[in-house]
Image (cartoon, rainbow, N blue to C red; front, side):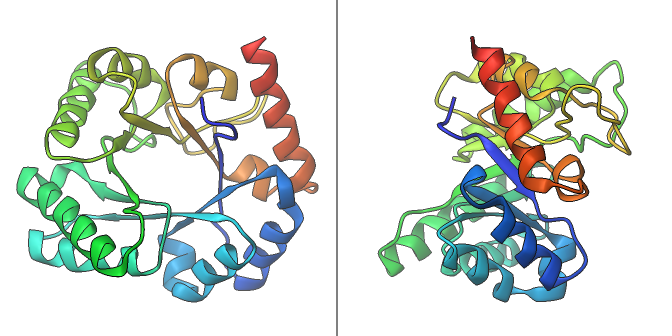
Length: 231
């Protein structure tokens, strides 16, 4: 497990709200996820703000287009010096390879580390079905074979991915809910401790922290759950 596997999703509708959360969460959080909602509103401005606070950015824009377009988007993301970014595995092998090549090329040109590229397998808002686990595993294998660093997958598939693809393959798990929290619109959720035990490297938490009246306390509570789960 990473020293601090917690990623807080800044899924909010104003720049000011995002800034307040980043400031308040302070030392409790090292990585913030910036998704379509906030990036569409603020663009690189919010990325620079998070980085200016000494934090890492997980740019979750789920690139999915023709290979050339995705390659261009990935190069732009690399230029922002993000820590990690997402592409859709449904885009196919050629698209995924184009994303990896573009990231390596741009990072080398800038003289910076290449960001982690993780492939979205199946959205956690989709309900479980008979062939879901196999579909996720097949997409994870495709991601690894095309050079991606890992995948985004729910806790229900994390253990199988870890067993099949090994320890070096990054697994990012969204849909994390503290014990007793509501699932919301997520169908496949898990507690922080359960996700780590299943093999997840990073845990994405949004509403249970950002909508809490005391976000910092909510984040610390999740970190405490993780420590208990390891003991």
